[in-house]
Amino acid sequence: MLFSKQDYIKYRFLEIIPGALVWLIFFMAIVISFIRPIWAIYFIIVFDLYWFFRIIYFLIYVFISWRQFQKDIKINWLEKVKLIPNWEKIYHLVFFPTYKEGIEILKVTFENFVKINYPLDKFIIVLAGEERDKENFFKNAEIIKKKFGDKFYKFLITLHPQNLPGDLAGKGSNVAWAGEKAKEFIDQEKISYENIIVSSFDLDSCPYPQYFSCLSYKYLTHSNPTRVSYQPLILFHNNIWDAPAFARIVANGASFWLLTELVKPERLITFSSHSMSFKALVDVGFWQRDIVNEDSRIYLQAIAYYQGNYSIIPIYIPVSMDAILGKTFWRSMVGIYKQQCRWAYGAENFPFMVWYFKRNQVPFLKRIHFYWNQLEGSFFWAVAPILIFILGWMPLLIVINQQGIEIAVTQTAPNILEIIMNISMVGLFTISILSTIILPTRPQKYKKTKWLLMLLQWIFLPFVLIIFSAIPAIDAQTRLMMGRPFAYDVTEKVRKS
Image (cartoon, rainbow, N blue to C red; front, side):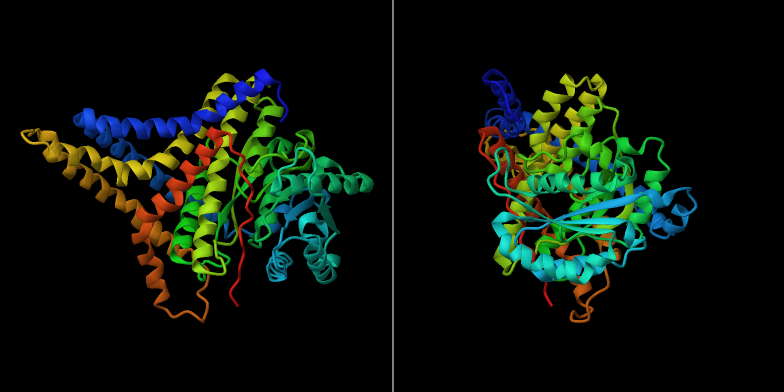
């Protein structure tokens, strides 16, 4: 994005807000704990109560979404699609951006893809590589094209040049380049943009067999399908049995967070693998090339372009992806941290919303709704675990250690906090059970006792929430606040034989 000097200063101010709010609350929590510890105790109790009600709210939506998921997964969506006149006109354009992944990752992805329950001759597949990985990419692309290319309507291979002006090396600039190349082919074939559904997938994305049938049905039966994005349920299950415990907790947490968001379209935003109309994609100018989180930004671009007349539809059929798994345990831990930083850098969406929604005349109430969801989500991601598990106990310790102070609240506050936390554990127990039920089949190389480990791993949740959730979120929002560019680190993908 190009700004004048004056506009750049205004935009930078908006970028500072998310991180500034986080550091302000930490500063106030520490200072007030020393100068007015009783006030701090009241604040922590109120905050923990708010957190408790958020967990109850979360659980309600978990069960609602779970029931819908269990219902939709049993439907033969292809049969329903074939009852719709002219359904054969619909094509699916699917992007698979890749950078330095090994051939084993590509093979698993395409071996899964050709098993989907939808005619493969209705697919235009784009394998999008980077010039920085040219030799490895072309070698792998030729292997995949030779084995799978003739199964689709068209198999395109694109190479994103490096160091293009305005490009941030990463998925966004790659798929934007690939999208323009795909458009040249589509124009040549004279396929109507309205008859093409675009899916932007990470390379490890393995859609369940019914996903594209369900997506087609939702598209064909919507009153205005080109003004809608479609968000599937993301399950990080491809290698969940092989991933370390910390990675499994992060992966399951992300899956269940999205599961609850699916039933709340007013909060839902495109995340990771998602779909939309090719017409809308062309209208907004493809994915933004200079940001980290192009998956969520493309939805906001459409909101701005269509002046708020754009929405999102949940798809309860999953797309399975990889949990973080590096070549060593420590590389896995670094991978988790970097992935969480990249996701948390989505706070960069806040200044975009404020800047472009008003200029594009998005309705006022809708603007406020988006601002609140973005700020509240980013804020609690970074702040809640630190306040609950660390700073929340500081004022209690200070008051207890002060001689001559005996106030009822100081004696009862620890009990109140303990009760709140114990009741909140119901949410943890529920997630642990559901995440175990939904697991893919246990590989034969693991003993049945592995199931027990899948349950016991949740005792590490407080540690994971602090080290692999709150701290990366603080890191990312601080980088944004300080104006430090965020390099796009591609997650290492490893598969155990």
